[in-house]
Figure (cartoon, rainbow, N blue to C red):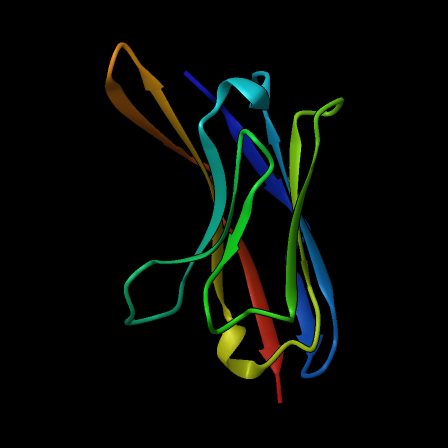
Length: 119
């Protein structure tokens, strides 16, 4: 089991910034990929950004250039720095850990943190 604890959501005006954190209960180098997903009301959950165990980052087109995913190996924590926020970024943001063990995919999710961007 991997426990994920998110923090850092809140209310911000359009154009502002927020930083989210996701602390994992295990060594994140043992996790194939960690990512941030979001789900807005009435919409499907979508990937925002992900970082592999090797440190490679990937971003959704909708956030490229505005969002940076990073990590602290010492703290087993992944961060999401969001800049130039837009009202359409409003959603519940979930941290995800993807691990494979003996060929079996394991997905773990945090409890979610609300991000609200006012216009």
